[in-house]
Amino acid sequence: MATQLEHCEILPSPAEVTELPLPLTFLDIPWLYFHPIQRLLFYEFPCSKPYFLETIVPNLKESLSLTLKHYIPLARNILYPSSNEKPVFRYVVGDSVSLTIAKSSDNFNYLTANYAQDADQFYPFVPQLPPPKEEAEFHAIPVLCLQVTLFPNHGLWGLEIIKSKKFAIL
Image 1 (cartoon, rainbow, N blue to C red):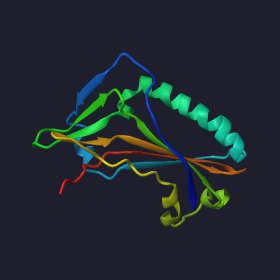
Image 2: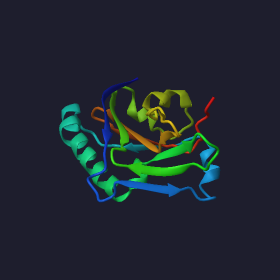
Image 3: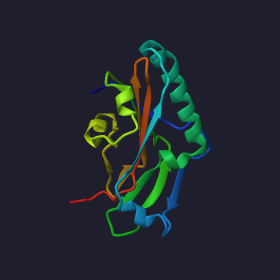
C-alpha cells in the first residue's frame, strides 16, 4: 500500500520559448492508439524518510525542472482538435509534468525479486495521468507523469507513464 506524501506540478526552468506547437509525423500517429507506456525503475538506496523528504525530493524537483528546460516536449500536451484534424504536440508557458511523491511499507525485496509476480500488487505505485483539459477547440492530454515511492531503509521506486493512447471522446 502506497501513501501519497505530496503531489506537485514541475514547470520547466524559465526559457525563451513561450509557445511551441509541433505536428505529429506519420511515425508518431500509430503510437497514439496504443496503451500508455509504463516503466518501473527500482533503486536500492537505503535512506530514511526525513532524508528523502528534505534532501532527495528537493534535488529531484530542481533537476527535473532543469531537464525539462532542455526537453520541453516532455512538458507538452497532445491536442486533439474537436474537428477531425490531426493531433499535435503543443507547449505553452505553464505546461508542466505531474510528480507524485509517495511512501510504502510493502516489502521492497519481495517486489524486486527475480521471479514471476502478480501485476496487481504494482498498481498502487502507478501515477495517474492528469485528466484532459477541455477547451473550446480541442482536448489537451498531458504527455508524461512521474511517481517516486520511498520504501524506508530499502530503496526507491520510480515510475513514469508516457501517454501514447488516443483519448476516447464519447
